[in-house]
Length: 469
Ligand code: NDP
Image (cartoon, rainbow, N blue to C red; front, side):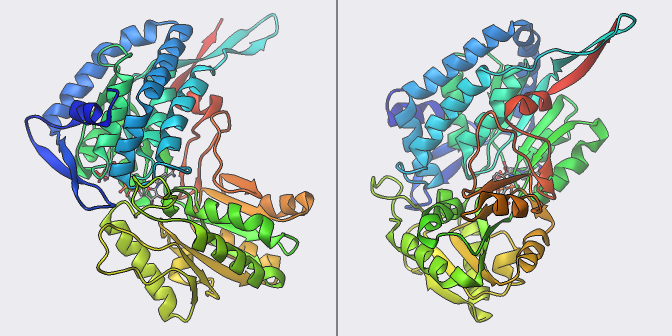
């Protein structure tokens, strides 16, 4: 699978039910993906169950070796994988986009291989001796969204495999090729049945989450779908990790340097053209520097090239699907109708090919406006003015979600005081959205529960067992 064509050939459907996948940048077909039914889900589960005991019986070092070899395989197929990802998601090849996502997937596998959960001695006092072990759960069901389809799949697959589980993964119906291709490359090195893919829509996802064969469901997606999964898995007491929607707030303090922070704020908001779970989605800026910050961010927006995902100059791409495009368009229109000011962007070309929406900065917007309080998940950033930090904190914490948040300022001690009061699973200082394989990540409130990454992430795909005596 050294070329894009060879990779695509390995994942297009040759028989059975199929679905045609369109490239969001061109609205032209990429190819026909398989479309699986419940019988095929049952077959995938059976393969995963059959493979699991032998996989779990390997030593930790042997499984780590497999993960490292999977990373080698991804690196060997990096350019074809990036070409497919760019076409299917619409993200450009360059910048923190398709090539970056493929490289990060390989790096994440290696970083996960390098970690393990130590056995903990709980009590050793001469009378009692007790240890805490973490065992594999069995078969993990992984359900991924369309925005970072290889990266998020890796976040779910790598820790699950690391500790001795086998996996059935269902990619989003919008981006099945990315999931299929990643698995096809990884499966060049893994034993048969350890990693399995099924393709379908929410109905197939619902069939997965209600199936008692799964000891654990790893889910990344919307809060609405997360709620359904909690309900459908309840009867089986299935363990869950829920990485759900967010609406991350950023607060810019009065002592921030507008020119210095503008670039990082822009890319914190427009990473993957704004389609990132922990992107900065609403910004609160102190009145003293409001106009300078708005202007500086608008300058970055104007100079960020948006275009076809295969154009090497593009740094921003289309929205991945028309449904999400309409959400962004509706929210910007509502903001404009309310009297907010579009500083740059807005006004998408109705005759354009592809789901392009210009990078949009909206200023002088009411803190209660829909573009502020609802998740846009696309290339539009509302910037709210504040003069009292208590107002900014109240607005930032008012929503029922809390994935990430950020504070921007020159005095770290002051920024830290504000960070400690923000209700989010991660609060960044002078950056937004940075994740690291050794740093646990997860949401608060309706952004979900359970940690991914690091040793906490390995524990989350394991079952604790106490040995007493
Ligand atoms: P969805 O929740 O619509 O879909 C996520 C996955 O769940 C898809 O594979 C989807 O299948 C599947 N699914 C849909 N219905 C069900 C069901 N009833 N039972 C089981 N699975 C189901 O989210 P999107 O893909 O539209 O992604 C956008 C959302 O995800 C945003 O709100 C965003 O904030 C959030 N997100 C959160 C992240 C985080 O880490 N917290 C990261 C990325 C996104 P299908 O697509 O085929 O319908």
